[in-house]
Image (cartoon, rainbow, N blue to C red; front, side):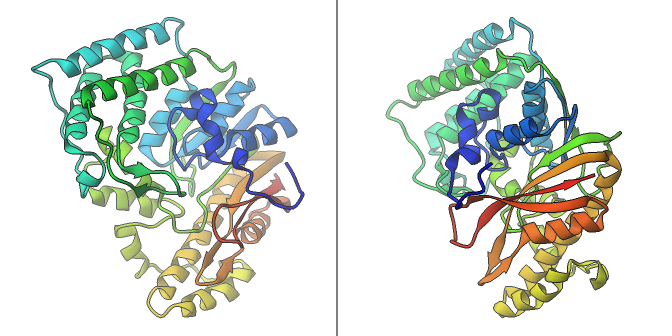
Length: 401
């Protein structure tokens, strides 16, 4: 990876995954660039690769593509399901059967007595989908759910692609914004064309099985409870301390696939995660109590009062957020230590943050926490400039077990 003057380097972002087979099945900002992972894996030997913040399964899939064994740990049930599907070895007939199933689905959608799945209980749903489009998607979801086996699971990914493509969600920022919901002149024809294209993209990815193996475990990165044994490499990208809620962006997928049923569930999941706060997670910060100050990184001890005083209303909340974020990261690293073999290596892709002009040097704070947890010789490498404030960058923090 380049150590020259930092550039934005779009090829090192999740956007570059879109044309990379299974990596591009869904366009989600929790994904990080396949190329970053590939370069780290190619530069470091080791059979067993771990990602304790698995997200969409990028690291585990990259490891499997190189004939290694990749393991991911992820809290979000939707991402666990998606990651497991991306790692699966499919039978040779699966792509053909998926295409055949897609045609049955579209016939069911067009039938006069078509069944409709319930509309997702998303607040202000009209900004997501125009009414005729929502009706068509409800019929499509019901028809997909009526299928069975692997074809149903792959069609579910295609449905998610189509659902977002026909929505008012815009991806010109790290998280969702909205434009006018799409309303094609012929909803039925446009929807069917879009779905067929999305099925083809998913089917093509399923046709190429990775030579290695992978596993996705549902668990909390602060405890890593389901994880067993030691690993040679840790390649991961934890949430950045920028208060972006990944759960918030994932809501449409999670509602349509039955992983969420009401807004409070999203807030509960966000509270259990390391990173963004949204909904009930935000209100709980007001009563959150940190551990002893001695456990904090030294630079954080000086930073928190400045963040707290930077804004009379929101400063105390954001200071508590930053404090909790690094406390959770310290807990995570302590839990990780027994799962990294002696001489193994860690590689954490992380971005810094800024609140009211106060820079949060996440890379330096993480390096200090790694050393405290017993990892050796942490080193910070500048990766790229981010597409936001001038002072925001991405880094890779390296260390040894």
